[in-house]
Amino acid sequence: MSNYLEIAKKKFEALKNKKNVNILAIESSCDETAVAIVKNGREVLSNIVATQIEIHKRFGGVVPEVASRNHILAISSCYKKALEEANLKTEDIDAIAVTFGAGLIGALLVGVNFAKTLAYSLNLPLIAVSHIHGHISANYISHLDLKPPFACLMVSGGHTAILDVEDYTEINLIGSTVDDSVGECFDKVARVLGLSYPGGPNIDKLAKLGKNNIKFNYHSPLHDTYNFSFSGLKTAVVNYVHNKEQKGEAINKEDVACSFQEIVTDELTEKAMRYVLENHKKQLVLAGGVGANSRLREKLTRECEKNGVKIFLPILKYCTDNAAMIGSMAYYYMKSGIGLADLTLTAKPNVEIALSTKIK
Ligand code: KG4
Ligand code: ZN
Image (cartoon, rainbow, N blue to C red; front, side, top):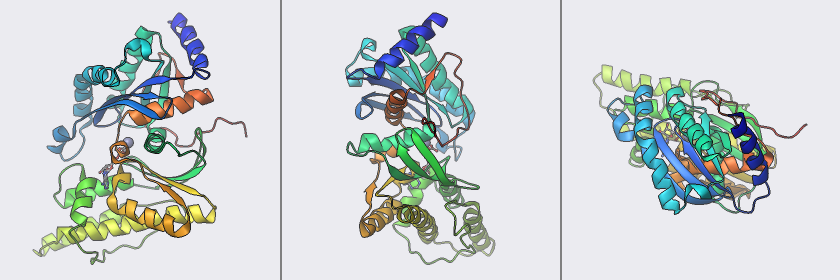
């Protein structure tokens, strides 16, 4: 084992100066089993995603134990397909990358153990990547011209934050949610409206058919900060629906979806733009699953265009969980000399968003 680590360290160091670096990445933090191969952090050679959405739909949300078991069933074939799609052999792979957190512990462990086994058996360096940083990288594979510095609005099922990305591995946390993530809020509202899992895309679709005409009993908190709070809004929408149901009154689901989505997207847009303008940022990057929301994309684009800020929206297939974004971030970790893991690597349900590799 110690011999493995010595070889891995040497190979990891040598990658910094290698012209072409192919990283095979594994992602299993929630309900997508994903394996991808990414060249030089930017070129996606293959991107395999086995989604468990249909399995979890029955339960109205992700059941962690069921997710872990299905990752076990899917991961080997995803790995084989990733090599096939890229038309590569194991000898062409320079490093193995894996999401070690944040996410569901049992689900993460499947990917982490698979990655450790691969790294050890192929004698390759193992790079442990944060899922949240991977979401930022979704933009590097979507836009080859994008380079830091930029401001980033991170909106996923697990996180909601404004980040200042000074460099690939210099990530400052500016503000985040003090309670629920925006994705959780979408999913909860969808559930109370009887929409199937995952709620976000269904709210997005339904909202297109509705009007912004409902005043929920809600006042946006945390006005003057860059932090977010979504639990009050979630409760206000749930109470609105329950009150109507108790009184036997009909609910216009389209209007509820539309009115709710307008509040959320206004808040996200307002705060992100305020940060960008107050701090003279020239580029704004959207990241995370909720970044697929059509109304949010529309509002951010409009505001950025109005204010002369360059906006970057991830390609839809890279918004939600995938391994290509992990392979991309692993490349930049490697360039900064961070992320090399040994075989004691384990999964972490929570990880810090902020990252710094410079001595300040
Ligand atoms: O980033 P992600 O795939 O997983 C985490 O890292 O958490 O985000 C999943 C979240 C779910 O809450 C899902 O409902 C939401 O992203 N989502 C959307 C849309 N597509 C996915 N929310 C709003 N509108 C969408 N179009
Ligand atoms: Zn995610």
